[in-house]
Length: 149
Image (cartoon, rainbow, N blue to C red; front, side, top):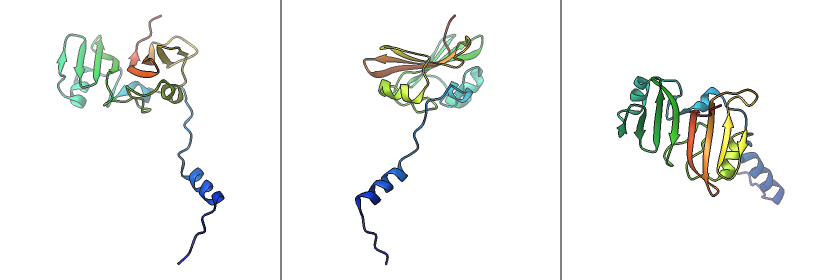
């Protein structure tokens, strides 16, 4: 049997080696523009196959548990996360702290009420992820074509 003598230095090295690597906030990718297996620009048939029948719907908005799907011209334009059972591709949920949103995403604008993450920071592009804040907590997350010029 091999005995390991635990020293403070050995314990520190073990903790450092077991930590997950720091994830640096980067620009949005196309993968970031999806929630619950649905991406923006998909049609209603894709939404039905992935999520089933909505709890309620009208001509442009379908409501699911903690998720609202907004359609424009027959395509998904906005995916709104309204509760903690859904998350963004990077793991942001309603109820998370504003600091987590700022750590996961490279914001193009942030203040006390929102963290806005633009798909194309250098040129206008309506695609974005917006975390709406209440105090220092995320209260809603909108993913999709949501910025108007």
